[in-house]
Image (tube, rainbow, N blue to C red; front, side, top):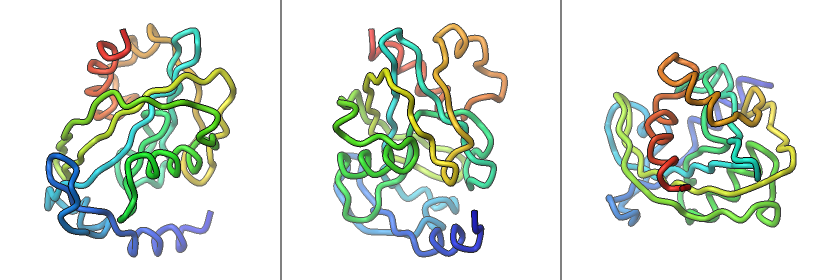
Amino acid sequence: MDRTLVTADRATELFPEVDAEGNVIGRMSRAEAHSGTKRLHPVVHLHLFNSRGDLYLQHRAKWKDVQPDRWDTATGGHFDYGETPAEALSREVLEEIGLTPDQYRPRLLRKYIYESAIERELVYVFAATFDGVPSPSPTETQGGRFWAVEEIETHLGQGVFTPMFEKEWSKLKSDIK
């Protein structure tokens, strides 16, 4: 992968700035979103289960600017300026794991505000069931696989997963029951 192209794309990427309800109130660059300004911007997460209840997780690429080389939701990404939640989800799922909307039927579980040391995000959490084999993008991830619930539980707090996934996991378990 050409790192020059990745860096150039990231420098010009525009995100919407939103209020707590998701209404667009401005726009910002990726750099502004992750610089500690704490300006709220929306993201989508897709939790992809198979019919056995295993959860597909992606291995984040080592070059990612946030939480590189950790395991995370099947798909997670920022809205581009002007996108709806459904459009952002569809684009991110196709980019990261190669699925088109007719291959999965996502349902919105919740939205919440997540805050880290460098950013604040309005997270739209979706779940879907898929029994095929996702095709993770080598430019977006280092692959992925389905994890049994017990395996996830065993690895919590060990630095294997992103902190955001670990926080979301406890909420997700109650949402899917």
